[in-house]
Image 1 (spheres, rainbow, N blue to C red):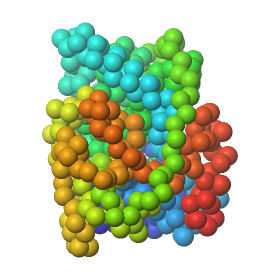
Image 2: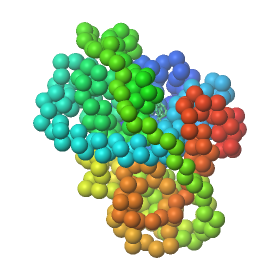
Image 3: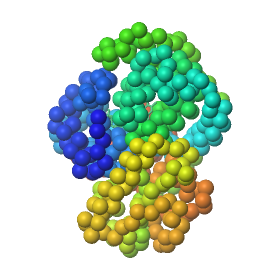
Image 4: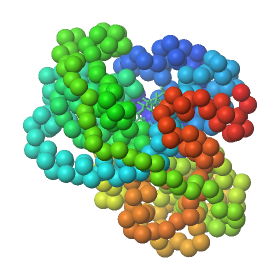
Length: 382
Ligand SMILES: Cc1cc2nc3c(=O)[nH]c(=O)nc-3n(C[C@H](O)[C@H](O)[C@H](O)COP(=O)(O)OP(=O)(O)OC[C@H]3O[C@@H](n4cnc5c(N)ncnc54)[C@H](O)[C@@H]3O)c2cc1C
């Protein structure tokens, strides 16, 4: 599997998927046929996470090819991500608490043999070991394997979900505070309280096309319990009026300025922000750091090719830029840095997020009902 770090390659992948594989997506998407057999899913997440291509662009292209009815499953999946983002925006303390718990657990488990064996792929569960190596090698796992992996980690290896979520964040090219933290919480049974995801031998066998045998798992574990509940914190996601002629700061989640809602605005200069590992709570693998840095370079080059004034800066340098707006980085490491260093930025929010996040107060099944409305508000015709 190859994730080439450029917008041109991302578009190629998107177009190829829509042209050749989208028709069978809903039928085949749950099969993990191994890294060489990924045509049943789009493999776009590393690009979407970094804003190299965005949800609106993907949905529009898919609707240019097929009707909404034929595309519904794919569109729903694309907007799951938007939903998770909004869910976390309304409850940012889920992320804050996660990092606090992680810090303590990391210390408690630093010499734990089961944990060290797990992250080295040295357990007695063959499929799990395989996915550990695949994750480190390809920096991607199929959605079903992420579910099985997290379930085995939590319920068979009996390791804390917080450490598993950290391990994913370190290696996944699509590592995202919302999708990852909430995905792990969901498997554990604390996202939808009392409902957990239990991986089973038959399910793994069936959906991996019998690539693994003799899988001994704890298939009867009860869900994890969390005493914590989170009430919604309402935030104002409206945009300021006058944004012409100022500087713009973009973070690692919006690395294609040319497709943002603000592309027509006249910014004086665009600053692309890089974040070093020393400024992250979760230290990324070398490959993940490299992937981000190549995506940043690709954005810089594209802006230069369009004769736009731009510069790559370290996040610590933002405080030296006057008169600027920032494309909202969303709950996660970048926003944490700004908050903990008391850097105040006026944010610009994407229309898609403004429309969608108001429906993230309840579950995804409720959110789903609003998808046609959200899409039509994006001026993508159904
Ligand atoms: C424990 C766990 C951890 C996860 N961590 C992340 C993460 O850090 N970053 C991340 O982007 N996704 C995460 N996911 C969600 C999902 O597994 C990936 O988005 C998906 O596998 C990406 O592959 P794809 O692009 O081929 O997906 P496709 O099936 O082709 O879907 C298209 C797009 O829809 C979105 N999407 C699909 N499924 C989901 C989902 N279940 N939740 C949210 N968005 C989805 C993604 O943006 C994806 O690129 C996690 C899921 C689990 C169970």
